[in-house]
Structure formats: structure tokens, C-alpha cells
Amino acid sequence: MLRHKLLFGVLGACAILLFGILVGIAILLSGVLSTAATEQHSAFTHWLLDTGLRYSLDANSEGIVAPALTGTAMIERGRSCFRAHCVHCHGAPALARQPHGLGMMPIPNDLTEAARDWPPGWLYYVTAKGVRMTGMPAWEFRLSDADLWATVAFLKKLPGLSRAEYQELARLPQQTNCRTDTAATARVAESYDEEERGQIVLRQYACHACHRIEGVVGPDTSVGPALVDWRNRRYIAGTLPNTPENLARWITDPAGVSPGTLMPDLGVSQAHAREMADFLFSEE
Amino acid sequence: MTPTRAAGMSSLVAAGIVLGACAQSGRDAPVVARGDAERGRAALIALECGACHRIPGIPGARGTVGPLLDGYREQVYVAGRIPNEPDALVAWIRNAPSLDPGTAMPDLDVSEAEARDIAAYLYR
Image (cartoon, rainbow over all chains, first blue to last red; front, side, top):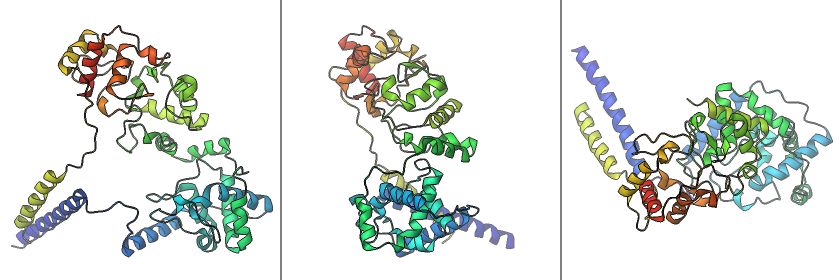
């Protein structure tokens, strides 16, 4: 008897679980869930995501040791980086953000509060790695480690700025000394597991926005050719014999290899192009 | 809820899902004027396009010199440079080097009618 009760209990639980999953799928396919950025999260969803972010930052920034965040040169450099890459979306007190920072959902927060309250390791980690399912990109492939820490150093000064100093930010020339140090950003890939590296580098240059790529999860796109079974392809862009060296050359200079091609020059460093090429050639 | 009733409800929902899952957003096959997919299939075999391309439905077409040609109607560009519309594809099939001098695809001396048939097959 007891055995039967247990069996029915388990079967019932499975049936209810299955029913729940099917209801979820039905809601998804009915289209009633809006993806419009004009809709807001429920307070619970917002709390869930915000709490998840904080705990994730806390866990993942463990062991990150901040350098001394002082010195005029460092803060000046961080200010340039903030001006060049952050202020468009985040704005600052007394400084309105650009249009793309206005209509986003979730909204990019004003950074003065996080700058005051968050440990430098959190600020560094969130800037370097970005935040999934928000508009926050990972910057570590764009900004060197020194630039990232300089940005954190400036962020720590941000809450103390005067109205005039905030507004002066907007008048800083776009031409900044927050320069991409390609040699330094190229080394970033090495911090990732060898198995994952190629896939991460490809995604960090948005390759999967136009190509379907084996081993990379992304849109079902047909803008560029699908990069499947790559090692067996004989030509790159229908013109260059397919070797890892030539593939890296194509990636760094598409128009130089095939004038008229619509594949853009994405500013991929030689080292990153090789990572991409090796990954594509390693596909079984 | 008893297991049987839950299972019954689940299958009802599942049926609803199958009926409701129709939010497809793929491209309709472009129409190639005077193109005939069946004749195109014969032309693809006769011209041995499969020596360089992998083409679904064509026996032995497993070439790796050129790109694979499955799902071609979805492809946004021909040869990475010309919007993928019937006339462009026909022109490319007829004389690829005239559109991209650097391409490895040769001028195959394909007639306009054959090219239209081939395009119709690739878009089918």
C-alpha cells in the first residue's frame, strides 16, 4: 500500500512539473509576454536580477587585488575613459546621458552611488566583464587592464565632483588618452580556458552577429556564410587558399584580400585573429 | 490533480502549442522569372556544380571548394557583396568573375535560361 502511495506521489509530481513546463511554453508561444523596452520589470523580477548581480559580483571579484587608485595621471586617464565610453549611457550628475542611455531597459544606473559604495574589485569586474541581458558590454577586449583600473580610480572620485566639473566632462575632446592598448587587450584572451578561448574571442568581435558558427550560440543568421565544417573549406572569401595564416589575414584585412567585400574590418588584433582561426580549424 | 488528469491537461496544452507555434519569420522563396527548379536540378548535375559546392538534393554534390549552398534563399548576400535577389544570383551564376574579379568561381559559360533554372532550384 505504502509503495503504491509513493509511486502515485512521484508520478503526480512529475505530471504537475510537466504540466507547468507546458504551460510555460504555451505562454511563451502565445506572445503575451512583451519584449518591448517600454514595459517595466515587475518589482520582484527587478529585485531578483539586482540581487543576483550583487551576489555574482561579490563571488566573482574575490581575489581581485586593486592597485593603488591614486595619482593625477591615473585619474586623468580614467576620466578620459569615462568620457569616451561610459557617459553616453550612464550620464553623471548635472550631465544628461545620450539618447541610447535613455530608452534602455533595464536603465543604465547613474554610477555615483555604485562608485561610492562598491569595492574597487566589483567596479573593475563589472566593467571588464559586462552584465548579461543588460546593455552593459564587456570592456576587457577594448580597454587594457591599466585603462580599466584608471576608470575605477576615476569612478571613486566621481561622487565628489562639482557641477562645473561634471559639465566639464562633456567638453572633454572625444580624442582621448584612453587609448586601446592592443598588445595589452590581446593578452586578455590568455586569461580564459584554452577550450573556450576561441569561442569567446569570436563573440567579443560580434562574428556571430553575421555568421552561424559551430560551437557558438547566437542568432540564426544568414548575413555572412555559415562557418561550419571550416577546416574542409578550400577557399576564404572565394579567393584565398584556406589556411590558418590566411584566415587570420582575411579577418584583420577583409577588403585588402577581397576588394568590394561587405565584411568589415573590426580592428581585430593579429593575436585574436589567430585565436579565431585556430578555433574554426579545430571544429570537428 | 490526479496524474491521469494532469497528463490529459498536458496533452491538451501540448496540442495548443503545436497549433500555435507559427511565429516563423523566414524569408519567402524569391521568384525567379522563367526559372524551373526541376530543370535547374538537372542543370546543376550536368554542369557538375557539386564538384565545388555541397548542394542538398544533388547526388554527389559534396565539394568543399566553394561554400555550401543549403538554405540559399535565407542568405543575405551573394558572394559577400551583392544583395541576394534573383537577378543578382543569375548574373553571378552566369559570370562570377565579372562581379568579383578575385573569385575562384570560374565563368562557366552558363546560358541565361540555365542560370534562371539553377537559381530557382537554389531558392526552392
